[in-house]
Image (tube, rainbow, N blue to C red; front, side, top):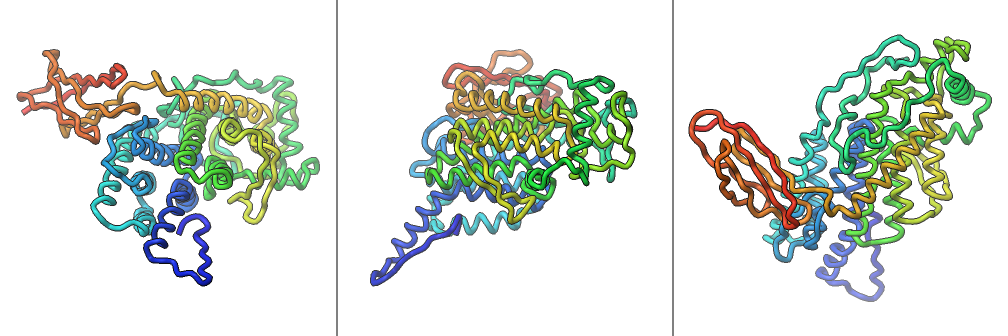
Length: 495
């Protein structure tokens, strides 16, 4: 049973099996969205997924659930809208969509996810209606996977490193290569381009501003700092969210889930808030990676040990937290948190809350608002000795700008997206998907000849026309109900 389970008082009354099943199904429907969100966090932790990948995982799972619920309610989705079977169970469909997405994201956990999926359907009779709902949810998740599988998540990125002052290079003790440099080129969810909110360059080495920032980190962020308070030390560990925890995005999801659990049992509302949060944080990760791998600023541990024109080298200095293996500017935690706090404040207002952390089991911290929590996150990276203050301040500002933008696009998607076309030349097939209304047909032109109309099935799939031997160019056009047009082309081998 999900959430906190069900508690029944039988007293002198008998509860029929039918009533019990109905009660189980009802309670399950209220907590299904939060359940799969928690399963995503659990998978992030158990597979030691890195913070960049975690943002994408949470965004895709959230979108799969939201677009399934919206399609079932005959409403536009964020990425995909498909026609729902008559009388479809939204929760069964959402279960299937989330399960399909998590198997894609965490293939090594398939057996565990299959078992969870089976348990999630226990309250529903194994009949044709359930099977139709499962098929429907699976189709939506697969369409989203087809759209995002080529977003660049698995490409190989390159980073130029060196020993020049200010230039990032691998840091002790493990001297790991840069993490996920390809994220700087990842296809955004709402941003127009990766560097849309790229900040100004940070203070240059040798300047007074850089020397001051370096001295501050050296003083308060050292492993045995006398200027850092016990509470600041606790906060640094609490917000560390290193690989092997929920990661920063997952930490904010746990905070959001607690807020939702206390305020609404409406699955659509829960799914909407989580999708808005995770889309914003996913784009914040892209904006942050763009800055990191554009400016490639050296980490404090390197600068402090080597020294600067305005700072005497401290070769034996070490930090409180282990330095992550990517450049310093911007602070990722700060960007994530600026975006998350912006979305959650817009959704819940300026509310106080308390929360735990997978990084410090048993420790609960209290906050007056989401913004105050985000500011503590930013400060915690300074207290941990792994960032400069300008990393954190500009990171918060960038995250807030991304969060505001992403939330606006999420709430007002009209005009932001035309239909999407994915072509598979080897299979002579394609997928035409729209977030506002199902695409019913596409037009295909062979080598510039007049176009022919090709039917698209209920799941968005279509077959390319056969052609004679040799190489040919096929141009495909899709038009949605609002008149927006998408085009794509591919080269095929006929015969």
